[in-house]
Structures are given as C-alpha cells and as structure tokens.
Length: 328
Image 1: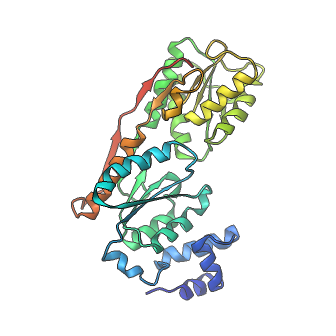
Image 2 (image 1 turned 45 degrees about the horizontal axis):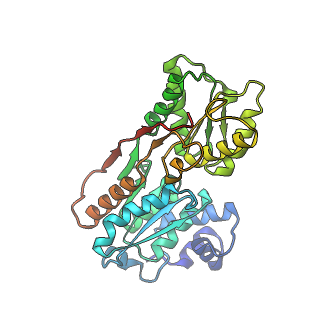
Image 3 (image 1 turned 30 degrees about the vertical axis):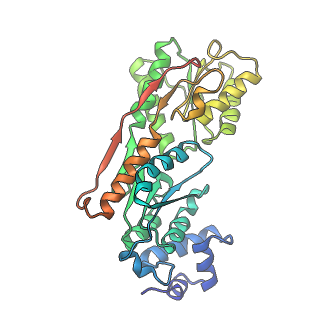
C-alpha cells in the first residue's frame, strides 16, 4: 500500500506538507499543493490506515460536495438526497470548499473518512479528484456535469432553460437584455450564457458585449454587477441573472436607485429557490428542480452500491420550467 512517506518522497516535500494538503488545516502554496495532489492521484494514495476497507465493508455514509452552502440551491439538493437515504439509515454528510482549486483536498479528506459514495458538483470534477475517486473504487455521481472520462451524472438543460427566460423577455418587448453571470469559468455560467446567446440570435436581437458581465453567484455579486450594467450610457431594459441570488442583488440595486421593476428594468433569475417568490416584486425564474436532482443522484448511488447499476455510465436529465412572476 502506498504510504504518506512515498507521496512525500515522490513530490519532494516533507511528510507534514503532505498531511497539510490532505487535511487542509494549514495553507500550502498553490504550486506545492498541485504537485502533491498530482502525486497522490498518480500513486493512488488513500490517507487513512484502514483505506483498504473502502472496497469492503461500508460505513453507511454518503457525501455531497458542493462549492458553497450559502447558495440555497444546494441544501435543497441535500434535502432530496435525504428523502432517499434516510429510510435506509444512511448518513449524508455535506461539505463545501468555497475555493475550487481546493476540491481535491476536500475529496481526499472524505476518502480518508471512508465514505461509501459521493455526489460531486461541477467544480470538484477535476483530474486529481477524479483519479482519487476512481482509484479508491468509490461510486460517485456528477452534479450538473458529465465527469471527464465518463461517469454517472444528473443535470437539467441549462442552455435550453436559460433560453426560455430570455425568449420570455423578448416576447415582453425587451431588446436591451443583459446577461449577469456568476464566475466566468463556472460550467453553469457558460451553459446559461450559451442559452442567452442562442435565444437572442433566434429572435434576431444582437448580442452586445457590453451587456455580458460576470460577478459571482451571490446576492452581493448581483448588486455590484447590476450597478455596472445600469451605469452604461445605454443601460439594459432587462437583466437576466444566472441564478436567483444574483437576481435578488439586481433587485436591491434597482430599488436603491429608485428604478421600478419591471417598468424601468425587468429582472429574471434561475433555479426558483424558495425565496424567489417572496422578494418584492416576486421573481420570474426557471424552476431547476433541486430536490428531484438530489433524489436522482441518491438513487443512482444506491443502485451502484447495491450492485444493480453496473455497466456504462448513466445520465439523468430532469425537466425545467419557466415560472413567470411580477419582476418581468
């Protein structure tokens, strides 16, 4: 079995540095961390003295790894997973990383705790994480994206879903429609931007580069992004936000500037989290069925663990739905 000293020697670092990468208890330089994680993945090191048991007995624990638990979408996914797991007395542990390039360290820590299986959001589907999961033989499901190299995943059609909300804005007479995304590198941002561009092209509305802006998937990101867009010399008459939290931040900025929604500027979101119907005005959005996504992920994992889901990778695509409210 590969040990921590083997990893340290191959990476040219101390044993304590490897331990710090695995546990995340102390900061490690980005270049050093990347080198250690590459060696861990290449050698198949599992940081637990009983790691070999991972292929045998079960712990009754499944993990959900997401980028940010402050986003209400992910707790709803966890609720859906619990619907499937709780009747079988399986414990769900939920963890977030907040820093995408630390996802591999998060995966290693969970493997060291001998979880039986994992659901991993897009940010965690990087090469070191996938190598560790596959090397450990731990079943996993990708949330929102197909794992590179193949694997089970559950998603909705973000391209088509975002196209729905943009087409709705066009039908309402809006022509200066801005896109306010999350982090530019995030898969949901890329897919929803693709849907935005496709819907405008189909409607014959030019895509303006100055109407495409990236912030982050938070309410504060929406506030700051909306301020930039509304300060344009020719401000948009509609802002299509990449999620509901961003859209709520847009509403905050519009209200602070004395703008009427939707008279002066229409605002739309994506996900239909519970708060979307409670803000003022209630938010037009796209229902991204988080609870059902969680249930589907849990079912796929249980089938793998029960030996019923052998063979090729399976894909579950769930339907989305436009939810029209007063903000548009």
